[in-house]
Image (cartoon, rainbow, N blue to C red):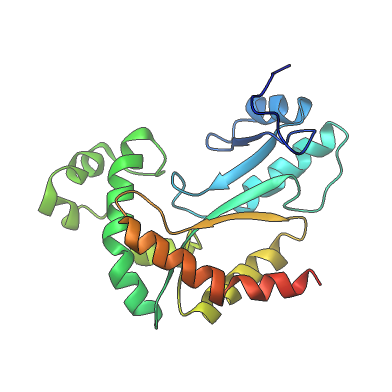
Length: 202
């Protein structure tokens, strides 16, 4: 049992752990001890995988917790808002690439060869190494970009896909993003996207 200072306002405290390795023993440990899962965000470039979400649901059920798909889970999504999807991709691409330089060597970008990992740190070599692109991340659902209505639409699709999902970790603060850009993106998200979801709760 932990003593937290200052004492949390809400008790009991919810505890989350990333489902990076997706190993069954790790999931068993989490479910047994009431630890919830988080997928995605900075480390995962492939978006939420249906198989992993289903595996988590089955693990929870094994320990007596019946949930809808996506229950006891947070899914992390990177967003970037601009007038069009193309403009958003163009502006966010360098942040995506810097993020990959950080996380790929740690094993968080699956399927890369040793040659690709080496090329990541060699400037121009990276462009001909067949590395995942920003466009790939958008197609996979790891990044949701474009005008606010497009970002809202993609988030709604995720919500429909996982009916038990109650929380998402959404942000534009991947590696190397300037503070001014992060603040601008969060302001846009708060004003242009959040109201759609706040209205759902009424």
